[in-house]
Image (cartoon, rainbow, N blue to C red; front, side):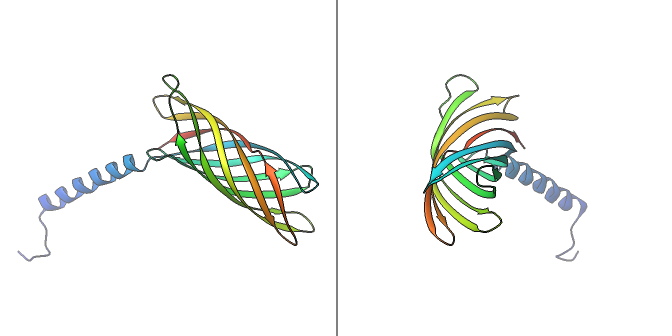
Length: 173
């Protein structure tokens, strides 16, 4: 028998080891993914903001990290806003069996585009919210708000304070 040849038993053992490895990795890196609704009021440098839209929220099951990709339309400024957020939950105590509160710090990076201008936005975030875990951990419903002081960089630099409020659900895989 040549060294690189394998018996059927050896191949079966490797296949079983691969299956167990994939299941273990799936449990270690389970994700919660789902839609969320955004409403973002704010003000800054003589402007008032009121954006609303949809986002996709992604939470790592075993880590206190939450990402979101937000797309909003600002009705007052007539702009389209795209934002990426990353939040690190500093606390998440359960108040009752499946109901908990959470809070943490994060960052936001985005862009606002209108007919005559485009603006890049950078912001630290402070997040506070509640969540309910349903169906033995398969689903989560959450409500959260964030304080988000933005640096807006475009043809000029200005600052804004926005308060994104989100309601959504995540399904864990």
